Image 1 (cartoon, one colour):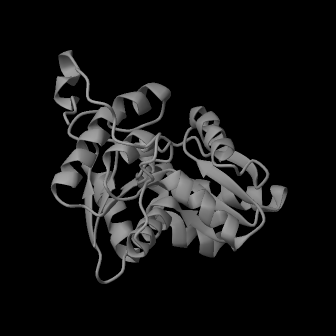
Image 2 (cartoon, rainbow, N blue to C red):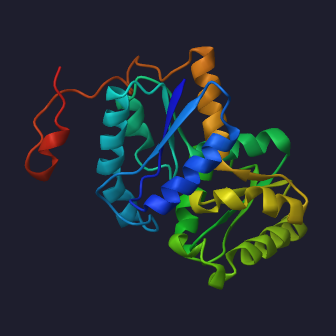
Length: 245
């Protein structure tokens, strides 16, 4: 089985960390390719960043299709381009926010989301409602550390996130914590041990979910909405994205 894990930003060091986390949970017969676009933002921390990350993401889906990938993980907590990716990919496509929230509902009655910057809280709340978990999510909180500073020892990111997770468990009685950024993936086990409740990394959850869907032979329905997009002209800088029959 071949799963392509796509970091939609262009920072290779973050892609390598995400790939390592995915390989750490993948089964022995699963090959993980961790990739990122060559065009787009260095990190995704705004609606503008998210919108401009999607063309590069879709290019990586197309490359994965040519390479025979069986399924895909979109490794950004905003789940950018998820619906469009499902239209293009032959196998299942899972976003890390979607996977993490589903996993959280299987290990407790309630969960909180701990994300990066406060400006991303609204997007996380939108996804909670979109995925149908408004009655299970008891809070969305920001550590206010930029994505690319999460692995900088000088920020003390791990301790800030631990303290925030502990606060929401104590205040909101959250049964589990969903980490709201792919850049936090490698902190998951450490934070869980410190806080005492399940701490869920969407990269790992999405990798195992895609692996399971491929094993079960399940993929995106082509009945209507997620059928392949209709061919039409694309002009200017997007001409390379034109689809043909």
